Image: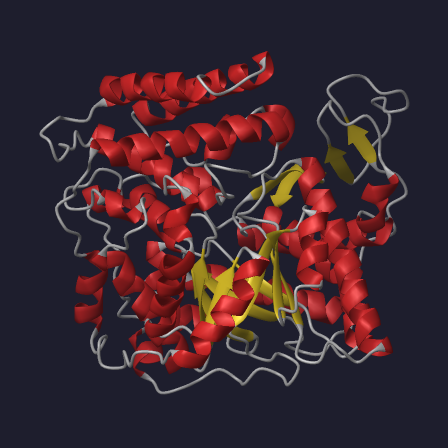
Length: 546
């Protein structure tokens, strides 16, 4: 049974607010930064009593199970250095060796060659996406935006409005057959810092999925549509099992059909790669596909291996060229998807944050990257610019996937392909390009609270995490550059100052300049830290993320 309707909700600010004295006790608390002065009508559209009640009941029922999952900040920095290498488990060998496939997706989940990704909080981008002609859209609450209170709430409001728009068009015009509006929530192990239930923080992923499904599922069901989720940041099949239990709970409480909520498995962590069969098996009733996040995967290699010998990464994974060990994982994910009856998706960035100019990503180069994704075995390409939809459709009609069926015959062979890294090659250009990308991202985020440009285009949080983690790894491992210079903390700090000076030559306004100076201080702290810092978001202005 759900708890009784919430009678009162306490909003906590940095300053005193009349009417929120110590005598008021509420089961649910929304903690909001001092820059927000009131509970707005926009908030109440999605954070209504029913949605909050539903989310709180779910949190209470699953808090014990989630307690066994590590949070991002608790993950070890250097597993390989103490002998805990990722490996295929003997206990689940039967699942990997058996011949089985997931249930086929329902008729209204039509595979398409292209999906359009956009930040959920960007209302203009969502409106353009709905009118873009793409048959599949991905509203991102995770990697495309800073998790400020405003962006999270605005993202949920936009998703609700878009869902109603799609349902209305389907009923009135019949123009949405095969159309999918998917949502990427935040990870299950991340925390939503703005919400307390019974005094404790809640899972960000659970908050996002609870609010989304409560507000949209009934209308989607009556319109013949289904909720679709991209599940990010999974590290094991135990996490997949937790997700499946949560979605089962939602379907039961909201009187939805079993496996009504469909999911795509986002592969962005090295440990999850060694449990893909098991993860798919846990979600087999609702899984429709897999996608590979190159930047998140690169970040996970540093986060798990630290500076262990043999795991210092090549700079090419940051500046546009794809190293063999990353491509091997991409191929493995595409192969695994086909083996288990799923679609597979590759992701194209409109302007990779490590390119010095957008021309490198235009024209023939962009087309070549799309061809490469299809040849790896992917049947869907995710793009972040609506102008690229037509190019993907054209490329898909003339490009056949490569047969990779015999490339991962044994566990040992697969493990070797995934964990064999070349001697790192690092250039001064690569270091400076990475520094420039992080400085621009941090300065923009400190100013606006949004996940915005690192160069000409938008940089995902995972791309910037990969960039700053590589800088830390090179410095801590005392990697030697291609021209013979050792990389260490003070050397990186001097390059940060040098790059900052170049940026400030073209930056006007005292506030903007101060944000860049703050960004330089933050980056120096992250690259000189003895221990690896789990998240770059912890170093951004607390008023934006707390």
